[in-house]
Length: 294
Image (cartoon, rainbow, N blue to C red; front, side, top):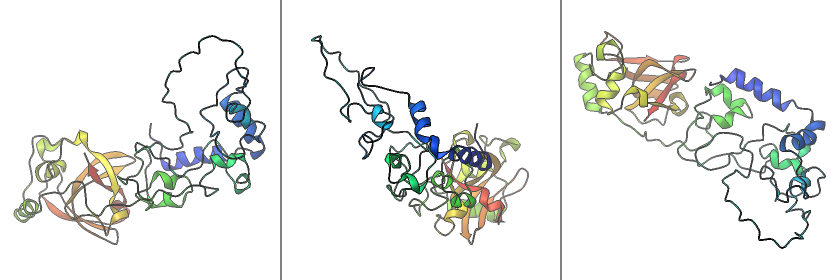
């Protein structure tokens, strides 16, 4: 289930209010005690190569190999063949399909500048400034599980889930999909009500019929939310397909953007029983319009 910003913010803040005095104890309980006698291998959930780990009484137990706590084997049996593993070597803090580690603090640790001189700084890269903000990942998009708006950009955690909206990555000025400008203007001039048998409502005359005809769009079930149009208002390519998402649910509103200035969006669209028309969308309605990907 997708969480709205309000609830997700409350959940994250609840985690971040953890008493700093209990951080190491909580970390030890979460990861589980691993001693050299029990299993002489580093815990893959701990960044054992970071400075200060072996000086920390709790963390070094999780890194017996790195910290030299392992004893040489006393038997002469044939060593077991190790099985390759694809386990992550760090605690992921945000979903990503790009294989790159985002600049985020670990949500399991209450990060403050006071931890930056100790071993726990590895879990607080954003607070301790040991990483850089994402600026060049491609494609540049918001996390689809977050209902991203400009208000999220002032939140220290949520803004990294809304990279495109908050300008934390490079947004291309060209759209992945563009529509047939001449065909659109002809239908607009003649005041047609476009019909497409694959449109989902109104016997083929719903708003998505425009994208199916003029943008070579697939069935609406294959559409995914792209970038918030108002966040790239002066950069978006004219005649790009756009649609409305509210609380991450696609509505019946879709069309083709003609221009965007000062968050006022001009789009060619139609509705059930109404012909193609040029509409002006202003805030707050314009905040719910996103580019369409497929």
